[in-house]
Amino acid sequence: MRLTLAIHPVHAITMGDATRLEGTTLKVDRDGLRRLILEDARLRGVDIEIASSGEECRVGVVSDIVEPRAKEAGSGSDFPGVVGPMEVAGSGTTHVLRGAAVTVVDEGASLQGGKVLEMTGPAGERSPYSCLQHLVIVPHAVEGLERHSALNAQRLAGLKSAVYMAQAALEQAPAETEVLESGGPADTERQGLPRFAYIGQIHSRQRVAEVDERIFYGDNTAGMVPTVLHPNEWLDGAIIAGYQGMGTETYHYQNHPVISELYRWHNEGKINLVGSIATMAASDNLQRERNSMMAAQQAKWNFAADGVVLTKYGGGAPHADMSLTALNCERLGIRTVVQVSDMSRDRRAESALLFNYQEVDAIIYVGGTDTGWEVPASSKVIAANGELAEALGAPMHIQSGNLCGVTSQQGASRLRSFVH
Image (tube, rainbow, N blue to C red; front, side, top):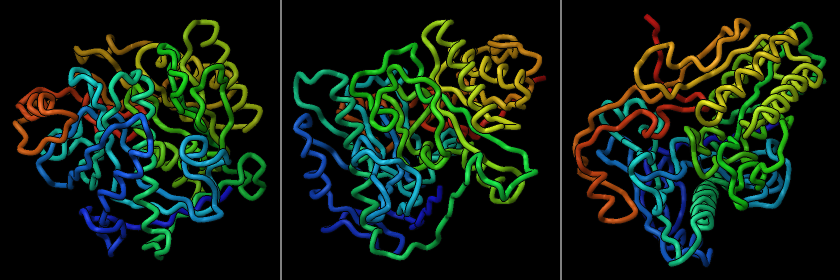
C-alpha cells in the first residue's frame, strides 16, 4: 500500500472572504465554515476563533485536535465511515496543511480534569501543539440534546472543518511530498531485515463506548477483537480519538509518532515494517487474556514479526493489557518495547509498577500525573462561555495530564523519566 502526503506548509491563519491558501497563509471564510458546520441540526451555533503560535492564549476545554487533510479526487475517502463513504484508508494522495490544526472546544466539559491548550510559557513549550496555527471551533448544541449526541456533533464539526480547510490546497502544487509505502509481510525485497510491527490500543472498555462514538472506520469498537491494519490506515483517517480522549488526539493518529518513527527506520533500510494491529483494553480478565493472546498470535503468525512496539489507551487496566500482550509476544520469540504513562503522584518507581515481567524489560515513559506547572493569567482565552473563560484565564496549576499533547499515549510526549 502506497500513501502520498502532499505537504502544504501553513505559517498563519487569518479570516477572509473566501477560504484559500495564499503561500503559507490560510485564509478562512468564517461564514462559509459556519454554514457548513450548522448543516448539522443538532447545533444551534458555533464560535470560530484563531490561536496563533507564539501568541499568549489559553484554550479549553479541548475535545479534540485534528490536522487539516483532504483526499485528492479518486484517491479515497476523507475519514471513511465518519465524514466520507466507507473505503479502505491509506492509499492515494492526501493533501496536508502542515503547521495548521483544528481545535474543538467542548462546551459541556468541566475545567476540572479537562484538557487545556497552552500556547506559551514553560507549560506551552512542553506541548507539540503550541507551535501550530489553530483554528478553534466552539460548537453549541441545541437545548436538551443528549450528551453523547452533543459530543458526536462537535467531533463531526471538527473533522468536517479539517477537510474543508485542506480542500483549499487541492488545486495547488505541494511544497514537498512524503511517500509512505510498505509491502507488508509478503514483501520479498527486504529479506534479512528485522521484521517490525506495531500494536496499539484504540479504546479502553473500562468505559463503554457510546453508540455513536465513531472511533474505528465509524464504529464504536463494541465487540471488536484485535484487528490487523496496514500502518497507513492509522495515518489516513481510519481511526479518530474517542470522546474521553485519554491522552490521545486525532492529530497524533494522523501523525502517529511510533508509526512515523518505524517508517523512518523502514525507509532507511534498518527494518521491514510489516504491519500493525489495533486492539482494545478489556473490561474483565477473560477478555484481557483473549485479546492479548490474539494480538500476540497475529504478530507471530500473520507478520512473522521479530519485534513489536506497543502503546496503550487509558490508565492502569490498559497498562496491564499492554504488558500481558508484550509478555505473550516475548514468549513467542518476539522482542518488545512498551510505552507507558503512570498515574502515580509521588514520583516513586514502586508506585508506577503495574507489572513486573522479567521478559518485558524495554520500557519507555511518556509522562504521568506527577508533573505540573504554575501558569500565569492569560490575556487571551478561548472557551465555551464567559464563566469558563474567567476561570481559565486566571493563574492556576496545570498538571501535565491536563495539557494537550504533554502526557501523550501516542508517543508525542517531550517528557523523560530518570530513576535515581
